[in-house]
Image (spheres, one colour):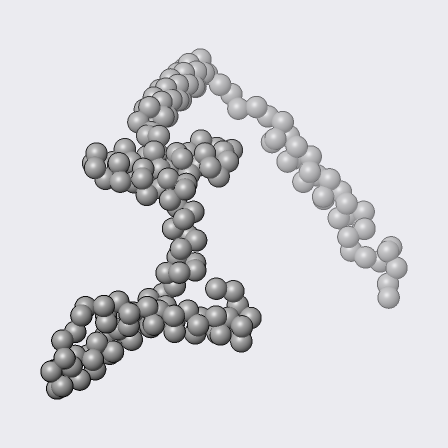
Amino acid sequence: MPGPEHTPYHSPEKNSEHLGNFEQRAEVLDRKPETTPESQAEVEKNIEKARTEAQQEAISALEVSKSDHETKTDDTPPPHTTRKESYDHTMKVVRSEMSAPARAFSKVIHNPVVERTSEAVGGTVARPNAILSGSVFAGVTILILYLVARHYGFALSGFETIGAFIVGWAIGIAYDLLRGMITGKRL
């Protein structure tokens, strides 16, 4: 491998050529463009025009921002609110768009006592499986009882439907409880 004295980049001729190129480049960079009074006035005129345009854009952007802020409705809850405050705000906004009877009905239905009662009943007594099984059981039982009563000439009293629904509902609740015990899921 040749030593550093044999490399072409370290030869004195190459170094002087590179220095000459650097000196020429430095001179070109150091020269300032000659400005005439006409071109100087033109530059100042362009700068003033750019400032004016920037101010106009800033003013129009500020006006748009103000108009957006003014037209914004109060549909969104204020930031950093609690869950109850957010719920109350949403209910207020939704009720403002309702008719008077619908608004009154909404106030009754969304009363905390009514809501808690409804959730408790829906989670225990009014289970979907219980209501479905009660309805199906009542339908099948009444059909059979009607056919038998018609064949033998008996009259139905009207309690048969309610009794059959209660029996079917009890079967549905029992099914839900058994399924909950087997799978380990709560009602």
